[in-house]
Image (spheres, rainbow, N blue to C red):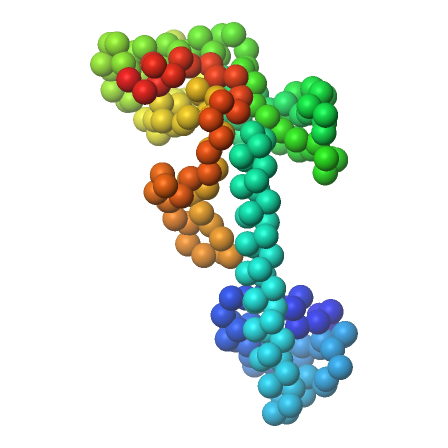
Length: 222
């Protein structure tokens, strides 16, 4: 039993919705739409109505996705964080609609009020020192990302997840502009359950100087 056709699935391909219903019917399972005004009996009328409603459901999903994305971009341009962990050396903090600090968010915690916002701030001094050391090793000492990871692991320093450093985690620290206080969004896209894509820099949504940086810009851009 399903509430209506849209709750069966707002698929971008209406045939996908029909295919899943066909699988159920082939297995002897009857799909019933409780709030619809037609009988799901396989008649030409029900088939036509379902096809139209499936297309409408997919279009609603597309429109909603565009509106949500536009809202998120607006908040990014205002300097607010839109999801994702803070990263090593940084912390997420909660502020109210007037900008007053309410407290730090632990990993996995989320804001509960719609009017609250999340920003980044510098983390513990020891983590900030490690981040800057990573940059100095890379820029001044010409160490590779793998060399830096091995050195940190040998020192017993762990990532914000408590794991060993890898080439990828070092690259993230060295390439993410949040460490100089810039708010970046839309570096990757995964809209409407399509394949995840890496966007070119001209598609990024950016707010420079949104947060207090922990790495000097001249060191970051070297």
